[in-house]
Image (cartoon, rainbow, N blue to C red):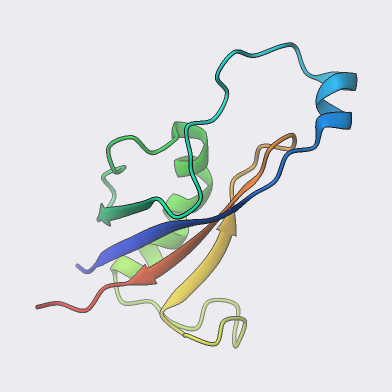
Length: 102
């Protein structure tokens, strides 16, 4: 099984939706643009958001087991995927990339 690099690429924040629909939260997201995680199979990397992991883990597993070309030509690099977490108020975009074995 291959390791998969997960890089936080972009974070959005929809303050209008938060003001209208979300209950106040003190610390809803710990991600930072540029932060890198390494996934080793199905194990969630330490410090990675549980909710985001629920979203990205099927793609991580596909790449970890050698899957390529997810969604038939979607990504320029066939061993990668751009996936966003499912937070409708502050979605985070993650770049997943298969790491070569040493």
